Image (cartoon, helix red, strand yellow):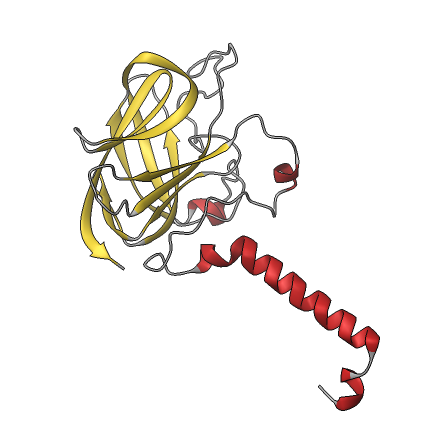
Length: 212
């Protein structure tokens, strides 16, 4: 910066505007880019999508865990839709069988982990992932993907090509139906349970490494 530029009011205003935008961007997105060994990062809306600026019927929720790990090194971020009197799964339901689903609403469900994990046979290094599913009447496919910066129903080739792995898990009766989708840790069974309507999908989770 030259002495003349430093005395120019218009230049100063432009400089402060740039600095303010950088600070705002860092405040909104900065923690998301930290190595997961430093910080898992917050559950953020995808502000690059116009849909994020509309009112939301399905709130963005956070679940930390696993419940049997003292330092809770994993974070699940998901949009929580409600049934609102609708059929949830299958023919005529909100979520058809045999089709890719973001496993929630709005953004894809995301898994932030500061330790190595194993979800069924799928091994995850410390990092941030999206979690998709393909529901079925008796079994669900659970799919882990490296792409997290996109809207939940973006199933383009650029997203699908970042798949890490998939596994099949049973769909079981929830016992008590859940009007609003929820994720919770089952410490006894060591699973991450997704429940909506009358269906629970228990995803086996094992912590296999230390912090990053």
